[in-house]
Image: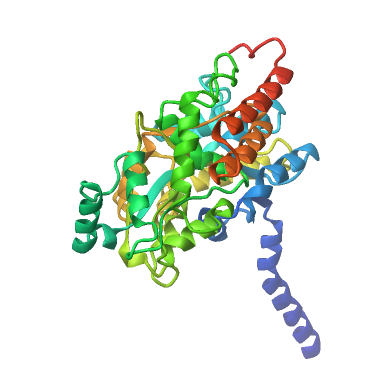
Length: 436
């Protein structure tokens, strides 16, 4: 009898000990796909605290990001919660790949608290329709990172004034930025003037150049007529490319192949005076352990010129039409957008889509660059948000990279972009632009 009791007790204990894993296994599994950058790493750490599902986050190389998502769509599978760039949304909605989140946004989430610019660019398809297919997960735009110690050094300031007749200050225009970058290039103070990601990978060279074009008063296309030829490849467009060619010459050797990692490294290792990159990479600059020059860095709004525009970044999180766990996905998005999770998001280095969180002390005090973010975000502008986005992007990236790096004439590059992009649009819309 005692032996029987021992056996029963052991079996009971084994059963009790196994309850935990069984319950965990019973939770639904959810998957997210994004591209590899600090916010994706942050999200990976946050989801570990989510109690109602097992959530995995895949951070893929940016050049593979869109292709993986749409390959999964074609196979009617993939991530339950894809995070798409704003330019992917038109193609995704046209293919019926995403769940309509309009009612969910308006009734289950604090709809009026979302930044309306972010909501329109990331979620609303088509814009102005009042139909939403994502929830803003990160707002983002570009920031200027500069060597504050050089800009505040009396000897450097005196030398700059003697050389240019101007006071050294954080640049307010692209022309000022170029002049400062040219002063620093090869100087006794530092090797290089300015760097950004000019590589043809994903949308890197495009987003680095587009806001130069827009700030000069140019346009990529006429969104009302779908006309590229004569709109992009005009005198203003050529000026914007030629300006980029000049500023490229102040960069380190090999800058035509610079992606995110190289841009961060060149200011952190002390070889470049100024860089321009997404705010989402800001966490890379806040620790001397990961960035040698961290104590010497300052942060500012990217300048304008004739006008002032800054490339829009950031994304929304969507629910795949092919997810077998849509109910669990809705619950997860509600948790992700809760006040508590959003505060944890900003304290970890994320940028929220809700105005109340953007204005909170928690956000403003979370990082030294956060106070400049609100000003920068008011200048954001996006580019094509149509199903042909990927084809247009590839054409622009190829020739821009060659032109900016000095391997192709500015006019020739823009003519080729305009010609090939026009052919894409004319084939897709033989009867003219779709009705609004």
